[in-house]
Every structure is written in C-alpha cells, then in structure tokens.
Image (tube, one colour):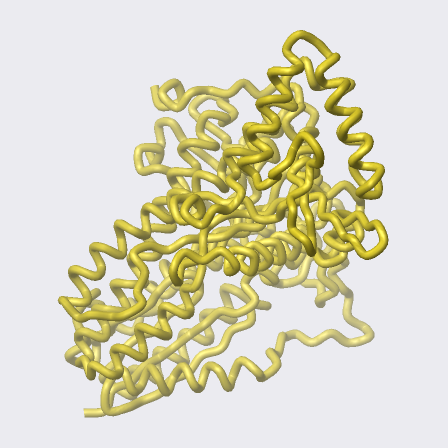
Length: 564
C-alpha cells in the first residue's frame, strides 16, 4: 500500500515577527505563529474529518499521525492520496489567510513506507527552500506604502499611520489571549483569579494599563534574549542514520521521532516556566487581580526561546533557563530512551542537551529587529566558543551578553573589533571573556562561570566602591594594554586606601579573577592567552549601569504573596 507524507515548514519566523518593530504587532505575530500548528491546524483537520491517534499509525483515509507538530513545522502521515491532497489544498489557503507575509514551504510525497515518504519530503523541502517567495499584493508606483515595512498599505491605524495587511492581522491578534502565555507560566499561575499577563506595549498612552511594560522606575532598558539548543541537528542526523541501519518499521519510526520531539518540547517549556517562576513572578506589577510580568515572550518552539525581559532581570532569567534546560532534557531523554527506543541502542546519543544564548541590552525605543539580529549573532558566537570546550561530544551551555551604548546597533564582528579590542602593536587584548558557562556541563568544561562574574559584579556594586574606585576602573578601559596595566596598579592602590574594608574587598576580587582565568590578578587583569588575552573587568563595567538603577514605582512581590 502506498503511504503519504505531508510536510510543512514556516520560514524566516523571526523576520515575520519583527517586521514592523512595534511590540504590539510582534506580540500578535508570535501568537499567530504559536497557534499555526496548534489551534489553526486543528480546526483545518476537523473540517476535513481527520482523526488523530497520537502514537498510532493511521489505518484508514480519515486517520492521521504526526511525527512533529510545533512552532510552525509539522510532518504528518496519511494513507489516502486524495485526502492528503485535500489537506494540502486547504492548509495552503488557510496559511495565506491567517498569516499573510509569512514565508513557508511544503511538500506532499509518497513511498512504500512512511519513512520513505518522509525522506522524499525532506528532499523536496530542501529544493523548494531555494525558490523565492511571492507576496501579494505586489507594490506598484501608485501603491501607498506602509512606512514601517515598505509593503503595500491596507488600513489606516491610530495616529494616521498606515499598516500593511500582515500588520493589521498581527495587531488584531495581539488583543486576544493565546496558549503562548500559558507555555511560559507555571501551571499554578493559570488561574483566572490571580491573572498573570505579559505586556504588549512599550510606550502606551496609559502607563498604568495592564498592557504597559512594568519598567523599573524611569529606566527604559530591556534585554532581547535568543536561546537555542546545542547540536540538535547532529543528534537527529545520527538518529536517522542508525534507525536506517536497524531497519525499524513505521510504527517504531513514528514513536521514536514523535517521542523525541515531545521530549525536547516539554523540557524547553518546563525550563521557560521555571525561569518565569524564579526571575519574573517576584517582580510582577500588581493591580487588583492583574499581575503584569516584566517580560514579553515571542517564541517558544522546539529548543528555541526568544523573549524580551526587563534589563535588570535578563541575566537571571537566562541563567535559570539554561541551567533548567540541561536538567530537564536529561530527565526527558531518559524517559524517551526507555519508552520509545525500546532497548534499541543508538551510539552517540547524549544523556542531556545544553543550550547557548545571546543577550542584548538596549533601550526600549531602539529597533528590535536589529537587537534580535545581534542576539542571534551572540548566540552563534557562544556556540562557536562552546565548541572549543566540549565535554566528550557535548558542548557546554552558557551565554554571551552585550550592552548597546550607541543609537546604532552594530554587527557583532564590528563590536568585537572596534569596541571590545584594545591594541598595542601586534598585541590585541579583549575587554570581554565572551562566553560565560551555565550548568553542569559548563562546570566540567572549566568555562568561566557566570556565577563568578555575578559575584564580582556584586562586590563592585557595593556602596564603598560605587563611586571613585569604580569610576577609575571604567576610565582605564579602552586604554592601550600598557597604560591599562599602569592604571590598574594605581586602581588597586586606591582601592586599598579607600577604607578599612578595601584590602578585604581586593582579596575577594583577586580570588574571583583567578576563578575566571586571570592567573596573576595582582599584576594584570588579563588572562595569559598568547593570542587574545582577555579580561572580565570589561564585562563587569558594562553590567554596572544596569544594576545601579533605583527602584521607585515597582515593588517586587514574593510569589507566595502573589498567589495568596
């Protein structure tokens, strides 16, 4: 009997979400994407009379099964060619209706087995990815243009601003609730009695509105976080090769891939919920039974997370998420191996997964598309640096952060070359260690740990150091390495003279610098890397302004209080 597979993949999701730069439209776009392969696809299947048995192969024309279904991507198995063609015809129409402007590719293929059909489908998708997407309506010289996107305008919004067709739908979607909010919230916070919401406006007309972002007093700084799992594609390729050698049947093929997809999805959601619990819930703005959280989730799919977080909470959120992702995947993969694999040995499968993140601190009025692109570049750089510290075949988890101090958000390579590098002849010294490790694997790899930099930041943020000594430290940055060493020695002398606790604080600083790889902190703040010596002091200096904010109108509430 001929088997059929229908594959669909939304592409350039981040570009679709960030197209206009308005937070409300970004929120709406993220809700559309999140619902696409969930509620939207479910409604399409229901209208065609499909019946899904989650872990069972379809037995008749109305049966359907998914080996993957999340985040704008799905792979489905069918037994009837006519029904498969009907699904494709309806679904492509639905996508163009609910998400105009979204790039996507699809493939309907067949084979003697479901596995053959899926393999053929992936080859077809790879070929179709190279075809340019067509967006309608096309623009002509006489077409009014939406100023934020450059696309044909469809409707005039408030303040006489024209929006394109995707923007109109995104804005409307932002006003509705969605399952995306619940994916980030712990289950005990799903109650309508104490309603937790995420804001959808950075510059609202009414600052007290539940939709307004709960900033820290007058500070309007946020962080864009992009996190991504390490080596997931390599794991899937190894899994595919080994399953082909073992010649498993379609039933086990479905069980293995659906089980793996669900394990990674559930682990990522649990990690995001734990990060929300620990880093965001205590800082909710409470108004009646409405609790507005200082963050705006954009994407949570597979092993990917994109979220905008208030600046002073971003590193805590990222740390908890990356740490929890490692432990949650260890537990989920253990269950998957014992259930779905059924004793089948797959060489090279890790015991856990890790993730890396890029974090960009910027003003709320700066373009999020540029900030997101930079956070994505930071995440990529973090993965590359992590690859140099593998524990076996597993990359350690961690993050790279950067604080934007200019009105223009630069390319990461330019930032490293022009801002984070000081030169003296042939010597190039870096003012950042780059990747800071988080999690068990990172500690085994010997990476500079975020907890140590956090301790250094806390010491330098204390009242006795907050003025003169730290100002001197900030001034010695961006000097030539030789001048920096002279000023560093003077800074140490002044720190000792600053008060009775100066010597004790200096000893604590030196101890932490050694932990961060600076072997002779009494002589130089740089590591002894012969090619690119680096110092963590530049990272601390960039963080100090973020954590010196004065709390005014935001009163953190404990989680127990907020749940009372």
